[in-house]
Length: 358
Image (cartoon, rainbow, N blue to C red):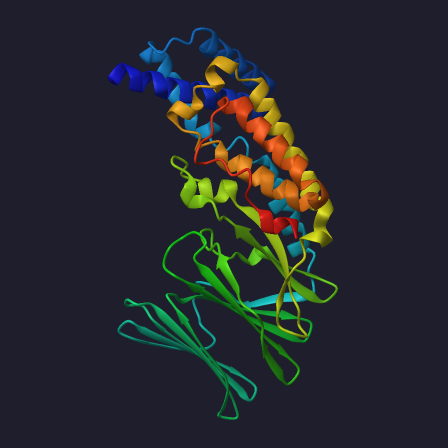
């Protein structure tokens, strides 16, 4: 049993080393290091028999370095969003999570927290109970007259953003169930002039990496943000970073006239197309560097470390080109079989993201 476990670990290690060497040209290594790593990886594959514990230890040492070798596409996407954020000179983030000094009234009584925000003649009151069952109530009054009230079961207040764009103020409330992935509800409240508008909420927002300041940017005087769709996180059996590696970032706009959040990925198609090209090239390069005899043993161990990237590829590619969604599904399915052989894993989602095609 121990020998078989070591053999399985060696296979994972060999694949991980190849993953690292296939992407090493994109990291800040010298040419010599890349060449040495590639030669070592190839030697490990050629000598693969699952019995060398010394070789196993050497390969496992590189496992952590190789884990995120397919992350280049998401790094590119995030870097472009940061550029948009930095170019948003008409935007000012006034309140943000974990701000030391709160500029609104905050009262904590045992497991009940009350936040009160004054906006001209309006008062926004958020009351959250952190004991089971979790609950958050949002009330808005105008000159002490109740104009809005809504109860959100199973969540507590997790964050408040106040963002100013020109003369419009956006109060963005994040409600969370206490989990980490797909746990959030986002409530946008917009103050434009003497009006206060509550927009439609966005559910299943991924707060695993929080909602960062850099996720916000402006375009033509409107506020935009990026949310991760990590719907398949709990399907993966063995990937510590499965949520972030599989998550498909989607861009939304806060409509200051209605307060609603509007999906606007179609306005950023070039960004999605370039991101798709990067992940496609890197997956194919990885496949070409792993001999078939090793590739097809992956399902017997776990496909978890690679499957998230295939989900990311599928979701991003459908957004980039909705008219060819069927062809995209076939392409991703073929790539899956090229890696794992002709057997399905519960972590395969070739029929996923149907809603992305709308």
